[in-house]
Image: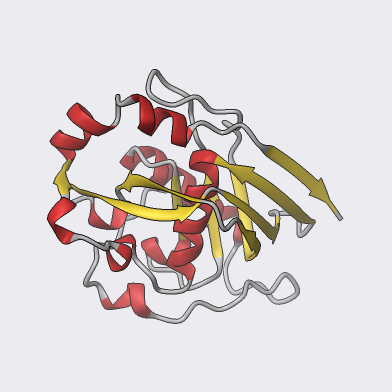
Length: 193
């Protein structure tokens, strides 16, 4: 079911998230994942965290579809339950980001994040996995993980004078070669167990 994406300033986004308990589930995980997916697709997003729909549990999803401005080695729907980031590269890059929780403001701004990330999480069946990746998927994992820690991307903007409108982002940034190159997913390693 499509849910409302909470916007920055909503106090629900500041509620501390708790771990999902597979033994005593606080919510129906299948329903929550379906709600997240429906909401993400309806809003035109590539990731969304449970707090963004008012559920303060450590879960987020990603699904990166490739398009003319973005090559993607991973277009699968991925569910991250109780994620933990094990590694972030010292090498970083700056990419303009937006967020479903600032969608009404239609803001984009440059944020510096690690180029490579390794995350450990559980899937919907409760199976533990580790995923190491780069490009837009690495950035997206860190971005969604931040939501579980009550951090919004606007908190990470170093130079507010570089905030741009959605229109300027689509026109000037999204098609730029440097942006496409930094978004491309070239590394994708997944292991279970």
